[in-house]
Amino acid sequence: WTNTRRRPAAMAMQQDPYYNMPSNSASFSPPYLPIVQDYSPDSNTNDNKRGSFEDDSNDKERTATYSTNYSAKIILTCSRYVNDCCCRNDDDAHQSHLYYRDNFNDSSWSWCTFGTSEDAGVWMNTQDQAGSILAFTVWFLLGYSAITMTFLAQTGGIPSSLSFLYQICAVLALASHAKTTFTDPGAIPQAAVPRQLLSTSTTNTTAAATTTHSMCSQCQTYKPPFSHHCRICNRCISRMDHHCPWMNNCIGSGNLKHFILFLIYMWICSALALALLGWNYFVCNDEECEFTSVLVQLVRVMTVICTASFLFTSSMIMNVWYGIMTGIGTIDRLKKKANATMMESDEEPLEWVDIFGIGPYYTWILPVDPIFEDYDRVMGYSTPQRLLREQLREDNPL
Image (cartoon, rainbow, N blue to C red; front, side, top):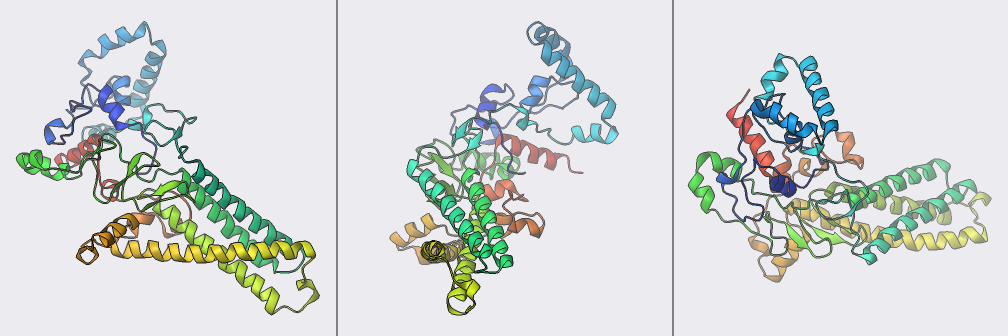
């Protein structure tokens, strides 16, 4: 599973007649799993968009009903039917009965909506004005530093190649900052269910029905382990580390990679700038190394910015590194220290593939979304549709 945008699962469950799980039910026992029937290419298109299976015995009757008001849908249905008949081979037809066809992403949603709710098209925290100002400040300071380094390279104060290297690191830092800000940090959907249902539903129904799980008193949803409710984002975040005002977003399982890359590239930019300015001041004795009066003021301000950035990012890198090695986030660590239970922790360290994904190693240094081998395990929850998919794989192994 990749981190693609999905229609809220709660909305799909309320609209889909094949889900008999109550929308506001706090029970996650196996009787509320979806009812499954064989999929066929003649299934109604509207039901396929909801990610369900249906027998095609009433296909003609439903097509006749929809023809009066939804002629466009008939054309779309016919085109898909022709495409299935002409393009599918025997292997595809066989696999359609083995695997759940998940076209949950086919439902429309608007790119023009910003927010942290499930139906928002773009994840963006619009409730914290102070966080928005701090996030813009990061861009302003990086832009100021990049322009100053360009002026120094043009006057010969620093080598052009090192200035170009600084610009690359600054661009990567800004891209990582943008990905951290506009990436869903791992918000728990309304339809989230425990991952344990996948194993307990097929082995011990009684035990699954009596197992208790944590619920968020604010969101009224299932609360996976290590997740916390953010009052600023107004959502429960999977493996939430903290809410960063400089990112104007929470740091969780979904954007931890981008946050780490931002810290690393910011540290490199700060260290490189301080090294270049120190070399120019203490080592270089050529006339080209002399700054004009304007550049002197720019360099003084940049020295203060880079020093503060270097110290701050160094402390944050050590904090994140400690969290990865111990498996304890910042919020959980503060709670354990307050309760004097830090020595009783039994959490396991985070695996690097659960942060940077299973993609090629060159993608680890790029601000692109990671691809997790087991998305449910990383996030700590599942959804009824994903549980159905895994159950079908167990029932029909290759």
